[in-house]
Image (cartoon, rainbow, N blue to C red; front, top):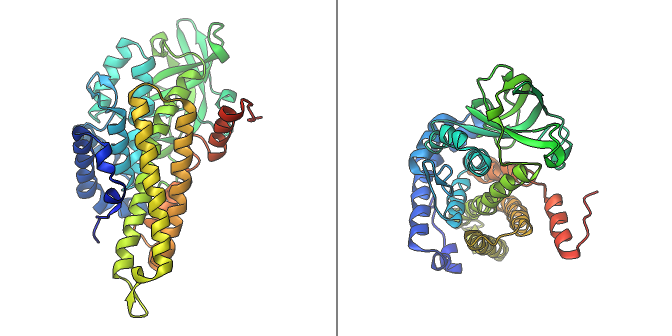
Length: 395
């Protein structure tokens, strides 16, 4: 099936990008189409992803931590990073999640909050895809309210001893290093929460994989368990105090989702258009019926508007002007519209829409997760509401 569409021409999207951004986008798109797309249906069906193999190739491509500078990281623009996320999620949300967690959560936390020793030890290997990272914030009972976390790090001489658990952790059981957030009794730390760089071969660390998922099946999801995990004082991220540390990293990951979810929506729409052009119903192509064209036109508008908002937010981020409320606006819009588009495209494909021969039902299932991770839609609505009204309504 043809992967081309008239969407870029309809919105003149390339006119908003510079030559370097187009080159990066096209390089990632070519890699995604040749290396990932032919296998993604099987990876999803089998619930297996060759993470280390894919990470090494993505590292060679320069896609891991690509928007960070130094320590082996390319230092591209935020917009270029977003475009890479868009092309990867056009294949599958699980692939983009691998890149987001590696670069925007684990690597960003070390790069932004870590010591020089931590940066030099981990970032070059992570950028190359030789070391895999994960990010331990969410707990079984504390997702949208991370301040209630129960995982604790207590002083024992010069060491820290970590106890507790984290849940729904991408890359967890294949990671070489985990960035873990825990409650401490440090008087000089707001809310007592601090971050730790935890090598996963540390005694007492385990990461059982979560199975029987119906979403993000081409992604490794795990629990993290800490049973008297002893860490040296140097394991603490020295510059991260309180929730500002993990929430700043989450903002980075959400930025990638703004672009990524639109990639999934675009792939669904391109698939539906190509299918409607070749599927005959009552002796003419399905694309020739008014109701099909109105569905396609309405979806194209939302995909185009999603691109435009993502590009605009990318420019704001490149200038250092983006706010958390703007990130929430983009994440809410992209995920909410993408899942609607996936469901609408499924109706155009009819019964074929539920098979893995086509990507639509896979995207729809994945987007159920993307809609709620990195902040649920409701949390982002309340974030926007607070910005507009001046009143917090989270409790």
